[in-house]
Image 1 (cartoon, rainbow, N blue to C red):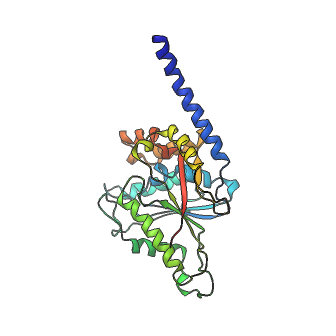
Image 2: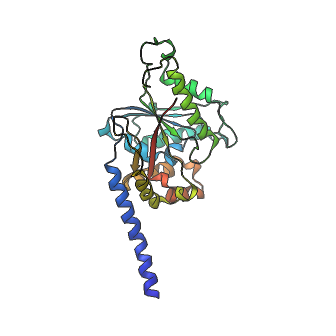
Image 3: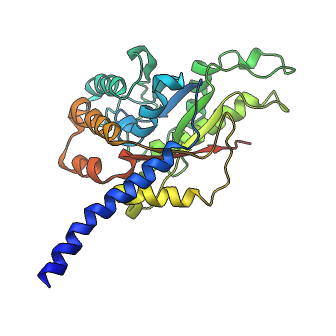
Length: 282
């Protein structure tokens, strides 16, 4: 009986390794974004590492020739650490491949509080996105496509991954931004494509490598678009990128490193798996 117990125990890490290698190898052949101007829209400093690390590490690879920006709509000042967290976000972004600190913009507005009980004003979010990325849209003739300074906007889906109301507000604000952008330009294709990070149930959220295999399998049954703006996007990090994402949390976001954060780093599927879907905004 002891022999069987030890033999079973030895099989578990081997099985996990096989599942991970299968998932990682499969993801390497998945289409991605290249030659794009991309904005990652987040709510708080540390969202970029806790949730979007795999996305940033992939899209910032030099061979893809993307320009990646981060727009963070709060300083994360719930505990009075806003100034510290601003610096931490910049440090983390650079570790995750963002080319310059100038590509990280942090909005510090009392109307956008870091709060678990605050739903942000989606019109305000839309206006901020317009100011930064489509300032001339309102004056462009209706006979031409609206101009935009980015090609892709990435953010949380309507469930916000963690259910945080600030996260959920970003999805609705981004959707309103695209609706407003196209309001005077019916018949034209939107110059900005919206991609959202998929929320999963709590069991999958904390199943790490196991969820990588489940995500790959589930995507086999999804309809796909492999054009210049492919969907869905499947990103599974290799060992080096997993380590980089973990390092971005532990060395950059030191003010946030409480005991439960280590649980997230080691168990959360979002530290190694991101699946993004392109949204159709009416």
